[in-house]
Length: 356
Image (cartoon, rainbow, N blue to C red):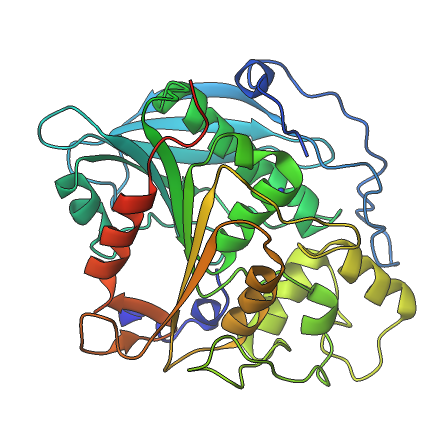
């Protein structure tokens, strides 16, 4: 994708607490109920067996906006603290539509570890549609953890909850929505499945993901391809190339991709997946949509399609042949050609769905 084509991370992609008291939790340091992080051990790290919980934003400080933030944005540097994890900083950039009267708020989060602001032309398009736009840029990959990506997603979910409470002002009369792709879409779905974000989000749009549907299958090179939609009858599920390096780093899983992996590791990967045992993907107040590109697709589409197959509430999948607006997809992303259709779709779905 432009200057990112040479970076294997572009191939990758870059969570419950379902309660109305979420904003209050943000001002309280979450209790640490987790065991040792396992750092320094020669053994694979044990998956944290405590249920995922939201963390806290311990510091929120106004800062000048880094490059890539929307023009006129107001930026805040957050320090996110989560049980069992190192603190991580994220800059949140919030910009208003030209008339100053936002009809909805949309959070945009980039792929891989979210270390750059998401734009790709969506910021201006959503502002023109009357949306307040929030972009997030992490200091380093939010997925990095010695207790698993699912628990690392506490960072993402805590940031999302802070934006809902402090930027959107927990306003139930206007839509609160999010869009991401790749690894960022994985954070969105962990936030929904394990951290109660369905109590906040009215609509979600993802592309090229979420890639953490079944990490165990992704780490098995023998996993067969699957159909994502009629237009894509054979898409890979097993991680390959640069994806393996990222998963191995984030999960501390050097045997990911091996022909034979230790059974304890396979179990750990399965438990750390979005579709872990017992997961129910039912979000009656959140409209979901996936947009996949028919050309340039990779494992993120195969993994993502598994998640959407398991969603029991409002969800749609769009497989785009060169973009509904014509032209070509860019890598595994369905833009720029599908951008107008994606914005139109989100504008229609990003409406209040949770009551007052």
